[in-house]
Image (cartoon, rainbow, N blue to C red):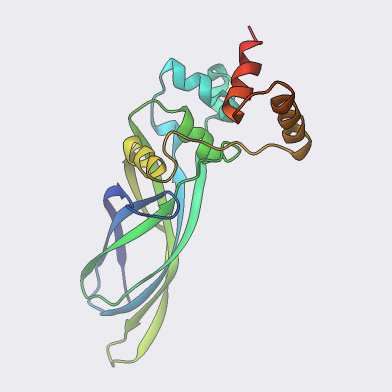
Length: 210
């Protein structure tokens, strides 16, 4: 019966990706002797927000997610970043596998808000694994066994890696989704004011706010 163990050995931004991706270098070992034919792997990636400290400037940005810092004893909870599926090819004993995690720049998404609010440091991650392992039985027959949800790995992801992945696709840019009526009003304001760019229109509105 396979007994898989998971460990994240490192992370890097994926070069030349069409959208921002962070590659987690995953080490998988099998404590049992069964040769592994393949693994249909599912992974839930959580941001363990309570596992790090936050500067005052970061606390201000995170208020949109967790409320005022005075309430964080009850509101500061882990965030679901994403859920992934992957197929790990055959191996015996141990293998290494690149798990590619998408990074959003949409500030309507919780993970996007979280990354935007951090100034530096690392993002504490918890990876929860499940799926199916196809392995050889002692008589050589192909068998399938489940990976229990108790299989997990923790990793401190450098924020710089996330920023590098985003900057590679969207240099010095971010995205904010607006409802159609708000976007129409902003567009009319931009045209009426003779402003050349969306950035200038928003800056003009911000300058009117004390």
